[in-house]
Length: 223
Image (cartoon, rainbow, N blue to C red):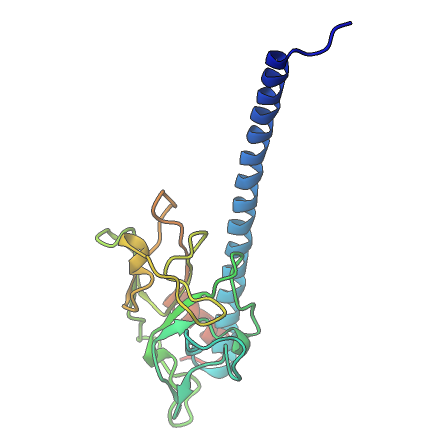
């Protein structure tokens, strides 16, 4: 009985290497899909938490300061003064809402709110907005695409696997966002939500003004 020749051994190792490669690639894809699914579930819970906050407080929550490290006192709480938001942009106020700080990739959620819908209710009113008020945020299919949702009250963004444009727990922002991903990181009222491609992996959720108002009516906050 003869042993393997060097050529046969090399061929055998090559085959084993190929099989291992074929195994590793699907496992990587499975991990990516799990993170996407977990983050989408987080966004669903965050949206419900924001609606619950509005029902309880008569207003939407303000963003937290994006550049504050999570080791600093007050990190993750609303950036708020004199009954109003200091800024319409920032990150999700995770501590205020009792939500996780980061998505499945360990980055903070970008959060923008319509300021008029996050003020303290005035003069004994039950809500900071009325049935005729709308948000000022637009969701598009691309930076120069069609409108997917208009008059949105608030938006929450996970910057996906590449994390470009996201803030980290240290308070540092990951640079390099471009094109449609830049639209979700440039602190204006326009956002992009679309199927992922080679240059876009953001996951976007938003608070519809109609859903918000219906919850407020059901809770007796409106009209």
